Length: 251
Image 1 (cartoon, rainbow, N blue to C red):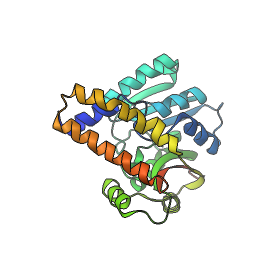
Image 2 (cartoon, one colour; image 1 turned 135 degrees about the vertical axis):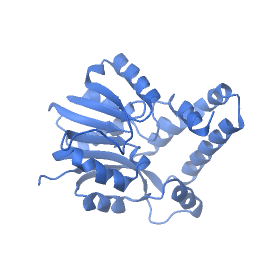
Image 3 (cartoon, rainbow, N blue to C red; image 1 turned 45 degrees about the vertical axis):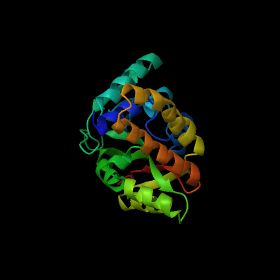
């Protein structure tokens, strides 16, 4: 089994595939000032197994297209949507986020929690803008520096993992560069990393290793994930995810 397949095996069993929380999804809805009664068309891009999708479906009067390139994740989302009684509000789409099939000005809201890094923050903003109606909303969470300088160990790790990591001020400038009007920003708190993402992942390590024969490849993945967790716990005052809310202006 290759590393990619192993990573899917580890993460598909998680409620979340990155830092976040249901309360923070609700907070982003409030920051965006979304009318919860208005009929909306939303794309949740890089939805994973659907943690944010399910909150949106529960709280909004929306038809949501949940997009992920992994059908395994979407199959789990469909099961969860049925159990939650919101399957009629969600359709799933297996495709790459850099090859989306939406028409120009089709969407009221583009939502993407902890996933835009897969295409790159700036590229995602530039390519997705055309899908939004004038006055449409973009809500994305993105790994963000919280301080102007960082310990060298932390800087080296994230420069390697995601060279676009930057301060919120720089991210907001990128939003403005690509024709968005920023209307809200907040930092995801510590529990979004530890309680919602890292601790549940650590609890799955043992079963993951057993399922995969305690192979060297599986142990390397666990070690890499644990190293990232250790870095976060040492240096969490310097890094988090920022939630960015912006509007496509009326022309």
